[in-house]
Length: 397
Image (cartoon, rainbow, N blue to C red; front, side, top):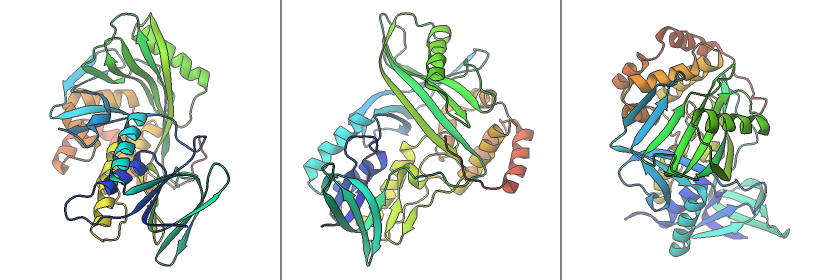
């Protein structure tokens, strides 16, 4: 049996971020032993993915960032563009493979985090800690006993909620035969797509050069689409909307992110905690997760290093979550036109301020000002209805 101060289950964004912070403690911080347990290659290991986030100045993982931008553009459903410079913020694109390589290199250099490949079968509370029971790819049983365990695996089911939508998307990494993209500009939300009956859809373009980009079709709606439907939506967006004629698809990306006002439990036993998306790090109104993961894991690492009880904080304030619950209900109940709602916000509010709002970095008076630039009466109706809505289990995608 292995023993450590900390055991981390899962090597996605949350698990790797926490391991990285524990491997590089700041001055005066306690040095802790840690074990990172990642599933062997196969269905339990998350596929490669792209994370995007915004921050001011240099960031902790800039060495792994694929591309970054200061100018964002949104297209209204009628076609008019809205563009802005988001300085002092920068919008950053990070590929999971590059992130894992950077963190893996730093973990190996520090020697303070032991990495294991094994499938976790159960986590058992024991006196003064918890025990992780796992099995390696060759069938060998493995146990790790730790004072604290942090589990970043996806939960088996979503929490009961008043409203749950899914952010689901399919993207193509494309390479064109001639210059077709502006590498200095992100197409953040392009609403020149066919809108679903409930929710909204948009195109998303992250250019990494004049002849290459990640182009995605995204929906916020109650259910995912068939593979053929995603392909058809992307063909329409790349061909009819963007006018791309000569391009090669060199990679694909597919994902589903729950957008829910259901509360995610962040503690499952006295010494066992959930982190990352499983611990509520996803912002319900947008699906952005990476920045929330960083706030959460930074707080956990600080608590551990200072000898405090490391309960993962909720990365999004109660006020932010309340506003998200209202928006989700307004979208799900058809009280607002989703495409018009977001396009209107981006056209009436400076983008840097709106991004700070979406990341929970605005003050109350700024939030009131943003709220007055939404369809006020439908949003007030949604706010009145939300507290009376029952919480129901989500049937699944």
